[in-house]
Length: 148
Length: 139
Image (cartoon, rainbow over all chains, first blue to last red; front, top):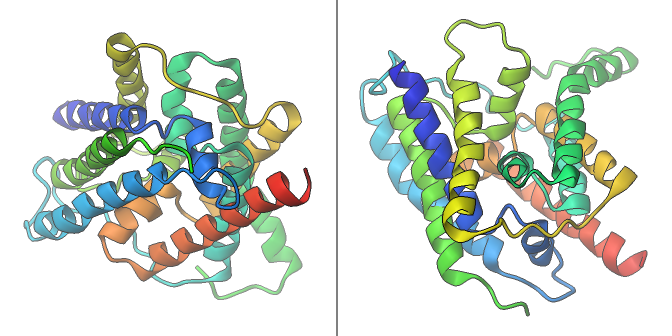
């Protein structure tokens, strides 16, 4: 129960952050990505500010023997830079550049009840769901790779 | 240049960072939204209720903003089939690439992970090129 409440509160802070920084607004995001147009530096300030906090906070937290509400830290285990990572990041980059929405802001923006946002989130859910099938097909076409 | 939202950007960004630090401190989890949604779709593991709770909070935070500051500023930049294509690519890409702007960008760089830095540089560069091609070369 404590974990659920803590996660809910963190989600609220995250959602407020995305709203206050206007990252839920695709126009702000595209404005940043459009360096040849009317460049909007806001996204860089948001990213810089957030990373500044995690760069300081994460090492302090990871010095603790375990999280306050859990027995151990669940950190990502993969550390290799492989084709799967880079092709995935590239496909994400294309989608992000087309719509100006990434997963966090898209979900938070559902609060606006905008049908366009709902359409984007629905398509994103389909993409998240079918990704492993696409990956399996590609692996079968290629020779089996050693990438995890 | 468009007038940047300096205060909103810095304060909002700090809140995003704070939420990520708190998630690690309290639950020991990385705040990667694409991963949290994926866990939400494949809802079969015990003790995974924190994921839907986070999603509810994420939307709740935006609802709170609307209650206190008025409607969310949302100006869509794509519509119809293009929006669907973008959504599909974001879904497929973040799953294949194991993360998005939050997991790789905010948290991964915070953990000083070279893998996350490589992913962040890649999706940023590809997004910049995509916008340049669609808004300047093709229009």
